[in-house]
Length: 182
Image 1 (cartoon, rainbow, N blue to C red):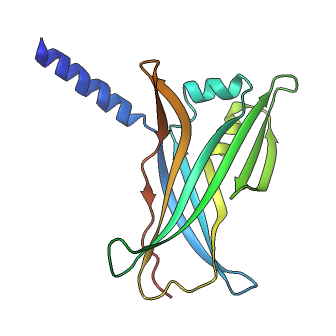
Image 2 (cartoon, rainbow, N blue to C red; image 1 turned 90 degrees about the vertical axis):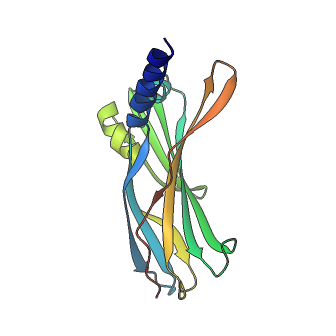
């Protein structure tokens, strides 16, 4: 009996991990702005995110936000001494039952950078989960002599476990290839 329960638990855990939301295809490009600052633009997509409860929440008309946390991390001499630049991208969708449209807003560090209206859920999915050419970081300095990496994860809100304990739904960190210095 104990072996059967253990096998059932492992099977359920494996199935849950297979459908877990995750960041895929993280790519970055470096651009020089007119003020000689370095702009790091990111492209990535969020897989397995708009199924089940999150989709139901959107279609019920409640404003639903996916928060993308982005970090530029550069190791220094000591393991505790890390240079981190943080940025957040909020993608919020609201369904309007009267017009039968989805309104989508993108905010980068609390500043509205894009908004659009789509007609159906098939258009909504890539609008919320496919992120392209986001100017995540504007650096006023050179990277120096140590490589840096960009990390991204998504926060999909919370749910309750056993109807009592709130649990945050987040992806694991996705990490870019190291940025070469200079």
